Length: 309
Image 1 (cartoon, rainbow, N blue to C red):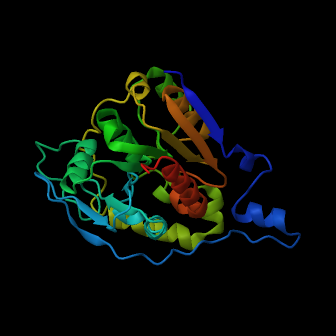
Image 2 (image 1 turned 120 degrees about the horizontal axis):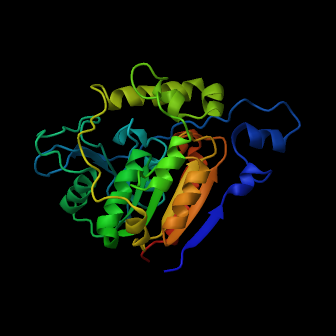
């Protein structure tokens, strides 16, 4: 199948539409604000509890309703609680929104060490237990690795796939060489910089200390005992398995993402049969938190475009 690569959002980087302080500077000759802070919206009512699946206790929340379903998979350093900006916006747009905490993250119990299962397998058990036949899957950072592994195994279950700020971890030398050139060795561990430095872009950290602190608090809440890493992701991610996916894929990242920069997303876009990329200006590895208004608009437009109706 011929690869289709569409690149959008680049105009924001070269004098087009902008966000945050950049937009304020272009729109007024007055002294621009440092950062346009977006308040966390009031959350809608949602069921919270454990999924009825064997061998593990997975915490999730579900806004309910009759709309098409969006399932959210969180980054490695966060949990189901990180979607404060998305939960009410997506639900008020008419969607049923569901998010789970990966094993070992915020209230989810890892289960037996001799049978850790896989991250994508847990997603399947959750959606099966909820009786979901098809849905839209959104995975950010490590959640994007899980989402890709799920799509490789069960693409028939997906209306669309959104991978935001993700490195996907394909078992390919081409990607491994690119990733090594980012020189990220030494960032992990107790001697490395804090998670908010690694994941939040410099513009956000400089301009929004309150938002940075709130993100860090959610990280600490998500991983009080450290990050659980005993699970596999699922079926292998390779250029071949990515090339077999017909589901439409949105690759979304920030222009200041240390881990998944735009160049990496363009590489991935060449490997999927039907991929679109979007770059969010003034954002790092957490576009969902740093620039939630643009993130939500782009994802909702993508989901609506690939609705079943």
